Image (cartoon, rainbow, N blue to C red; front, side, top):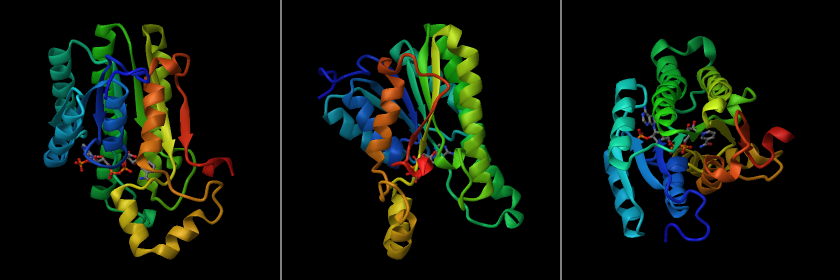
Length: 257
Ligand code: NAP
């Protein structure tokens, strides 16, 4: 059911990138359940198509676009189409991300660096500039960018990933300050280890590694993607009306340790 009493995103038009799996797919469900019209973007059209079918069966308004966030023109097209189709863009969850590469820094080649920085940092930049232009025209909005605990502290995730997720927080703060007077809030989430498909596969192959990863973590487990999506939905909603420029850790206490 959409649009019921617990519908803080009722009537909002929301763009979600990286919606074909993991946190983004969970966000598509959470945002739609909270009443949003959801426009989903990623590269794997078959996944998005299936998700849109599932959402429509619950009564939600949903559609998808096949997009590579590294290409600014593709993002511009999706934002323009969304405004044409629904009249505005109210909410954006810039969540598409390319993963961890544990190759030592001095052995990482340019292509690997470009892939990670291009998706995470440039991709967030591409989204912000066109989303903000649409939100300015529409009188305001709310944006959430997916960083990581790797955007706050270094880890073995690889230097390009850590740098790109720090960049996401920098872009978030700069945009929040610049556009607060225009009624646009911009925040980041910093998830800890979350049970995406890639993480599940790694856990299956490395049960000892999973135990070790949480041996000293306060909540001693990984997040379910839905737990991260709920935090993003809250930040996108008017319930968070005085929150901007913030980075919300969703990490079971990992960075408080
Ligand atoms: P995931 O299931 O691998 O999701 C990544 C999403 O990004 C997919 O939908 C993927 O879709 C999309 N994507 C990747 N490159 C893209 C591109 N160039 N253009 C458009 N879409 C692209 O993993 P996830 O954990 O849900 O990751 C979501 C976000 O959370 C990422 O930003 C990630 O860095 C961040 N994060 C994850 C964890 C974790 O432990 N899982 C922790 C902290 C932060 P397509 O392949 O279909 O394009």
